[in-house]
Structures are given as structure tokens and as C-alpha cells.
Image (cartoon, rainbow, N blue to C red; front, side, top):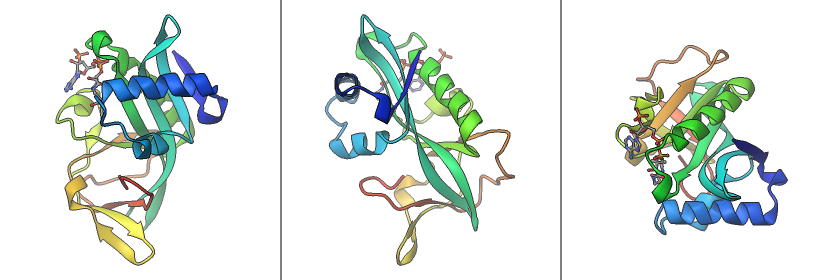
Length: 174
Ligand SMILES: CC(C)(COP(=O)(O)OP(=O)(O)OC[C@H]1O[C@@H](n2cnc3c(N)ncnc32)[C@H](O)[C@@H]1OP(=O)(O)O)[C@@H](O)C(=O)NCCC(=O)NCCS
């Protein structure tokens, strides 16, 4: 398992990770998604010098009611097609979670996959989702049911039915 901050990635490592994600997401991995996947720490497995599974963790500030929570947000989870079903995503996500355990008050991510993350022990947020903007809280209904959390020792008491918000960012806010 390799781990590198985005700043530590060589340009060719970054390009190879991007190529993995372009393939894994079948052309749906946009520049905006890449922009959201950098600025934190990358966890990846290589085969013959080529990344075949990846996840990154970037810092975000989620809030439940008025309590801001320093969150490690998981982005860009992908495994090369021919290497799927061998536990690689499970491994990179375990490494990502260890980093979250050591660094943040909470882990979180957005996924439309119905069971993948719950199967790996993540909890699905049930309450309504919002984004914090200059003009106040804005509902993000289409993201309801897609947010998953990972509790760590430092996580405050959280009720999965409460409203949850993220800070605004360009592209997909969640
Ligand atoms: C989803 C994805 C990352 C899984 O990668 P993988 O390396 O094949 O996953 P693993 O082999 O580590 O699987 C871990 C567990 O999840 C299960 N699983 C794998 N893919 C799944 C899926 N799409 N839906 C539900 N469960 C899934 C596996 O059965 C396995 O469970 P088990 O260990 O009890 O058998 C991969 O299919 C992928 O890159 N998909 C396209 C990109 C994508 O959708 N990324 C996630 C966006 S949030």
C-alpha cells in the first residue's frame, strides 16, 4: 500500500492515478472530480508500477446542527476493471480509514452505490443534507441518502437523523 500527499505525488504518479480513475469510471471522472480528489492524501496499490486501486482523503468541514466537525472526506475510489473483486478497494479504504482515525474527528463520503460502503462498515446518514453558502444553508435533496460516515474515537455524539451540512466547494458540493 502506497500513501502520498498530493504534494508528494510526482507528475507521472498523478497522471497514472488519473488514468486509473478515467478507466475505472469509464470516462465519467471529470476534471472537477479530480480537483476534489486532490489536496489531501492518496492511498493506492500498484501492479508493475501502475496504480490499480485508489482512494484519497481530503479535509472538509461538515457540520451537524452548529457543531463543525473536522472531517476526512473520501474521494476518487476506483479499482481497475480487471483487478476488481479481489479486495483492493477494501484495502485502500482500510488505509484511508486508518488515516482518518489518526487525523480527523470523522470520516465521510458521498456514494450512490447502494450497499458497498455499508457492507464495509460505513453508516448511511439518514437526515436531510445541506450546503453552507454565503447566503445561508441550501438544501441538497439529491444528495440525501448518499452521505456515509465513519466514526472515530474523536467523533462527537451524532444522530444519523439530524440535518448535516458541508462547506460550499466548486463542482459537486458533496
Ligand atoms: C466499487 C469499486 C471501487 C470496488 O472495487 P473492488 O476492488 O472490486 O472492491 P473489493 O474487491 O475490495 O470489494 C470489497 C467488498 O465490496 C463488495 N463490492 C464490490 N463492488 C461492489 C459494488 N459495486 N456494489 C456493492 N458491493 C460491492 C465486494 O463483494 C466485497 O465484499 P466481500 O469482501 O465481502 O466479498 C469498483 O467496482 C470501481 O472502481 N467501480 C467504479 C468506480 C466507482 O463506482 N467507485 C465508487 C464511487 S463512490
